Picture 1 (cartoon, rainbow, N blue to C red):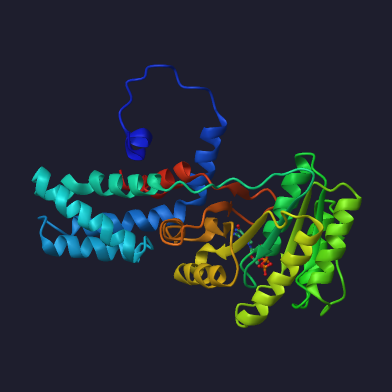
Picture 2 (picture 1 turned 135 degrees about the horizontal axis):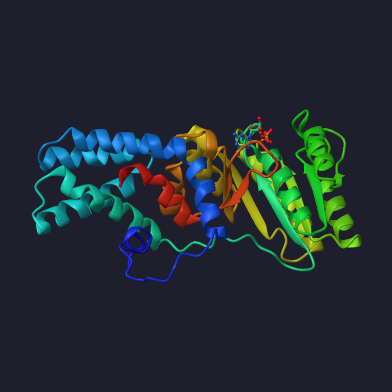
Length: 330
Ligand code: GDP
């Protein structure tokens, strides 16, 4: 059974609904976080459907365009349109309304086909997570939120301020450390980030830390330097702890839309990425870019930022996401 039927299909299962479950709570968070995206997606698609009386070539061209402007991505938009052309012919659909749920079904099912692992590594004795991303995307905030989450779960956490390049980055991380009562390893501004990483992993091992979160300077402008710097940090980490870093997470700002997709492409050319954190999804109408990141770039989205507060971080839940996205269309 396709994802669409599972999420939206009629159910013959009469077992009573479970009380307020974790799943329901996740759906609610996603619905709220995605409200701007789903509203804009819904409006675009609804006004497109209202614009046509019949299903002709112009209809399909406009559908493809609407999907592209909804950040679905060119490749996925044209695949879905082609599928629909055929299905419309087969089912002899004459009106746009007859295709409404089919459009959603195609989108949802395509999305459900992707099987990327969205879970974060969790290894003992020590999990090391490296954070990359350009300034302002919400990298430090996410590290702070994650530190808080691990701390609350009873894990021993350590932060490493290996973004020694940007003025203020070190003190910003120290500020987050204070907020969740997590220590921060730092060096002077302008010092070698790899030496901060070295000090941090040594301390993590000496003190029996469970999770080490390493901030880095995401200077995409100078790719050679960035690559060298990340390689050096990774080399030092893995010398001390063979599998480290266990995760390399790229933070992207959802409000920047196609720019975020472009950054994902450029960063993945510089370093292997194990996952994306899509921040500011709450303030963005462009959450549809998740489809592109997953479908085209084949990078799993692992975390999403759902607000500015310390608790506003959610694991990526693909079903809750797609449900929230198409909410205004059905
Ligand atoms: P960095 O330069 O990548 O470390 O970015 P910061 O962590 O300093 O964040 C930049 C701004 O984005 C700050 O004002 C944060 O409060 C804000 N921000 C980060 N994550 C989120 C989020 O998920 N939702 C919202 N609404 N704002 C966020």
